[in-house]
Image (cartoon, rainbow, N blue to C red; front, side, top):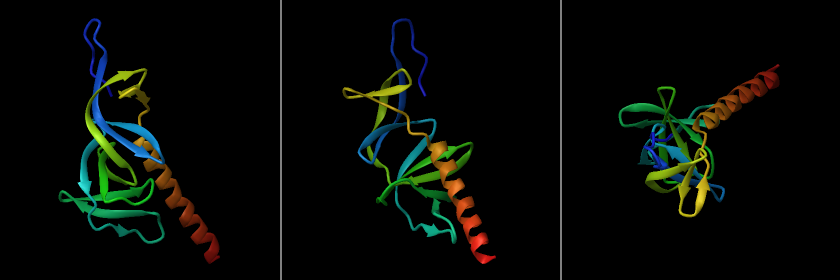
Length: 136
């Protein structure tokens, strides 16, 4: 998340500041790839995820909050994933203090994109199991 500081210099990290449910979070530039206008998102039947074509790539779209007009395009383990429901407040370089970004007078925690993806995947498996149980 942060660059290596020189002697006496604070650590700095590039990224995007977003909010979700009134809380601000920081997404490091190593994860956040772009902020894009929401394209047509096709729901995947029987799941809570969608798929969209962004920059010539088919991308998984996960709703982490109320639907918005923008998506935060991220990369998790070399796979693209777009997050819907985050409100983007800005991007740039921020001081990193104890693993949190200093934004104005607030230390902002990192948004765990990988965890959001894992939760979405668990939701897919849970829905599949319920569908399977309901069919028998």
